[in-house]
Length: 383
Ligand code: GLA
Image (cartoon, rainbow, N blue to C red; front, side, top):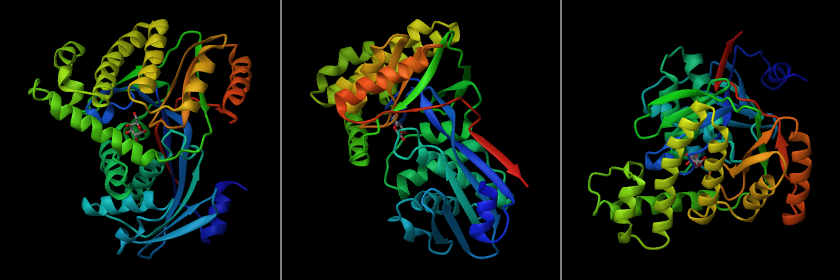
């Protein structure tokens, strides 16, 4: 049954609107967005689709087709849904929109999400952005997609308890077909860079290890970087965030830090420098340099930032050892989730087979490989 027919079955009327918002990969610039750094995400074909229709009540009904579950969110008591598993993302967005003075309307929302949950491909950002765009369209308001990204991030921070940066929501809202976004997370200035990878393809693989404690470990890393910054500011008072600190300045000031803050800050400072180099390399079509930087990013996330773990390491290193692959690294928050690999065209099938086999031998888990392409972040269709 197609999802429009299914919407009619669930809600007894037909939808008037369809929106979708994308999941994302990130070429490079990991765990630096909340430190004011540069990142380079791109929005995926894997996305959250929402069918919608006003329902004339004061309730937003949200239905998830994979769970076959509906949550009823009363617009009068939006603070009450923080403990919901899946509906809290929608409730959080509605609550933040209301707080910002935007109009809300009772409606039926049907969610069909192809971004695997908890995979590091930003399924929650896709749900948040899709919800905000649907509400904007149904109420006839006109706030822009950057505003939607910021409000969605706020929902995740204040309502869902994840102290995330802006990368995921921005990529979901602002992504463009076949482009990477070079985003400055301090100023929100951005540019699109064509994702032209010569004879290489991007392969996205999921290590399929259930995430554990991601939220608490993520928030812990963020707190560590805040603490490292305040110590470094004694030596470098002009730095307003870790991304302001050059590798040279860091080397001169790092004596104020000890383990583990030293390693955390070192990752951020050098990762920011790598993103700048990677952007130049991509613009120049120098894919071999880009590949080296991607590999260095993973190694730093593994050894200095300590957010990979056995399975993401095994998946990335198995990929790098396989013929045709020039780079592989984990993406997203870490502690599980996905890797991206740069693999020579024509060798991708053999690559998936060899990496899948090796990864299972080493970890006991079965990796999943996705058919991905880079597509527009948000799509809107009124019926
Ligand atoms: C998660 C967060 C992002 C970013 C990445 C790590 O995806 O939501 O804000 O911090 O982790 O780069």
